[in-house]
Image (tube, rainbow, N blue to C red; front, side, top):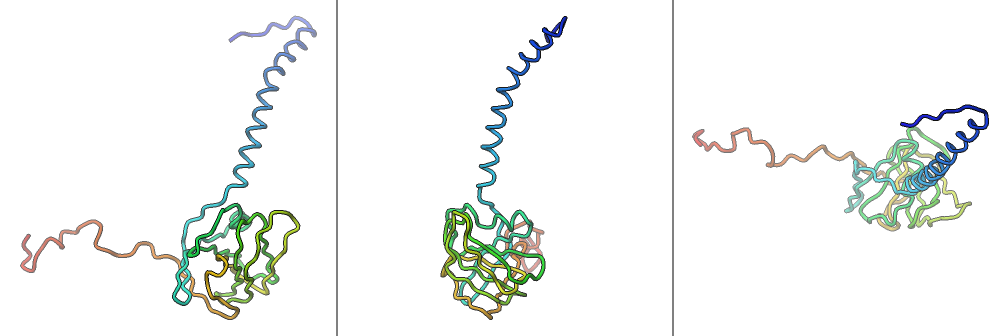
Amino acid sequence: MKTLKINSEKDLYAAAFKLLNILGPVAGVSIIIGTVALDYIQTRPQDLPVTHILTHGDRTFKLEVASTPEQLEKGLKFRSSLNGERGMLFNLGREIYDVPFWMYKVNFPLDIFYLKDNVVTTAIFNAQPCHKTPCPIYKGKVANQVLELATGAANIKVGDRLNIQPLSVLPKNNIGVDSGNSLKNKNNRL
């Protein structure tokens, strides 16, 4: 590594100028890459695991659950579509009155159901996407959860009690580790 020998104040300024000529472009490229990466991360749809199911009538919906402030804020933004058998359940953490939801940067219409203890308190049908502010704000009377489904996917109305359950860990089946008993016949012979 080469060391700089500084004999005078003029040499100090020259060394600082050389250093800025090296660091300036590096900082500029870093800022550009950081800005592009941040924009990509912010506009990327979230992919939450399916952890709950909703059974209503003869239909079953697989639900992603948003619980953290970041998940609640992002919701279904930036997705290109929502399968008719999928939805998102927002756990608000507590009972809230005049719950505001909007469709900012959501790319498709939704039905929004405000739930208090799994009972629908407010239903908004065909809430339209919005890409410029101000967007319409849809308010539910009271809710501790909000359910979003594709428009027209379910015949849900105010007063309905919804059957929302967590998924089972794994269904019991015949696939897995054999304890040895399945190979024995009635006489305990192999």
